[in-house]
Amino acid sequence: MWIGTDDNNNNNNTANLDAAVNTPVVVDSNDDGTVAQELELEQMRSTLEEAIVETRSTTLENRPRLPRLALSKRNRAVVRALNPMLVTYLEASRDLCDTDSILFGAALAVCRIIGAKLSTAGRATGQSSAIPAWRIRIEERIAKARALIGRLICFRSGNTRPRIVRTVRMAFAGTNVSLSQPDIMQKLTERIDDLKQRIAAWGKRIRRYTERSTRFNKNRLFQSDQKRLYKSLQRPIVSGTGPAPNQADMVAFWRSLWSEPVNHNEGPWTEVVASQCASITPMDPVIITPDDVAEAVRRAPNWKSPGLDGLHHYWLKGFMVCHSVLARQFQEALNQKSLPSLFTTGITHLVPKDQGATDPSKYRPIT
Image (cartoon, rainbow, N blue to C red; front, side, top):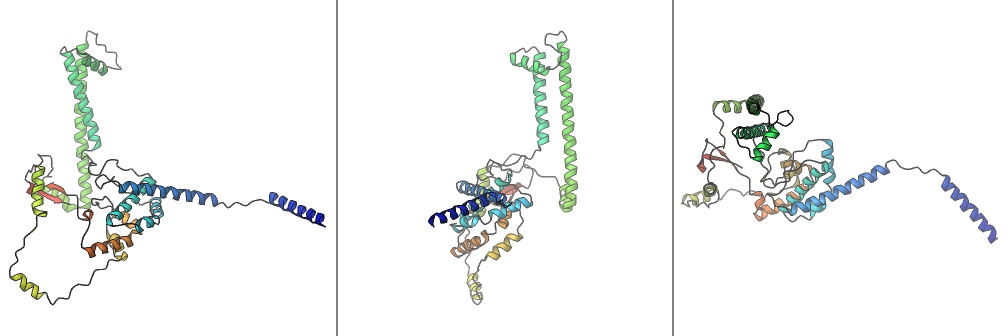
């Protein structure tokens, strides 16, 4: 009886094993996609963590400049993917400065994930040149040609120093001209004349390109802002190419206007005004809600020039989970009647009113 039972069990197990081996396994086609998506999210989470840690250890002045991103589906998808990952960091945020560091780190992570180009230097030293790149290239060619002309003239005058001779040989490289030829002086003169003609042609090219660029900018300005175009035609453009004013005088002048405490005249009329305003009902306490933050951010331009922190409004719109945290922290700052220096410090550019002005009062501050 026991033996028969074992035989039956063995037969059943063998049949089940054969059925399991011979049964085709159906694999879900979405498994690979799910695994790849999870790996991608984990990589995003790691990039976000590194960016936030890096931002917290970097001063505001040394933060990289965040580029302007295209409004593509891929970029929006990356922002939406990082949005829920910020909840853990924002819940542990201590104050507005910490929240700003978290948001900037998230923006930095988005730029790194999509492969956007970031400036390695700080924003304080990342000023771009006003001279176009094509003009710089042509002026470099002119400078090299003038230096070569000077070396050729020195050799023609009898200067046979090794450096001069080496430069002359390089000037005739690729030709059948040798320095031992009897007509080398004539060849030198021809080469000098050729370089002078090249310099003249490059100079005309600069003037032609400049005129074309000026016409293009005026036509574009006419389409966008005719009033500004007519003003620029009526008065000359003021540039800051003259002697720069003394920095100490500039700081002292504007500090006397903005930083010195003001002593108001406490006359008897103030008591009269105070008695007249005593019957006015005080304003209700201001309560900042996440909807208020969302509405304020919605109306702000995406890529308007940011403040000292370098964070554009675009990121405040994309990372919507920060609205509740910002509302709470702004409410705390309002109740405590204090704001961090991050929100009270700006970047001021002094634009000269007159040509070559050295007087600090002749500059217009734009913050």
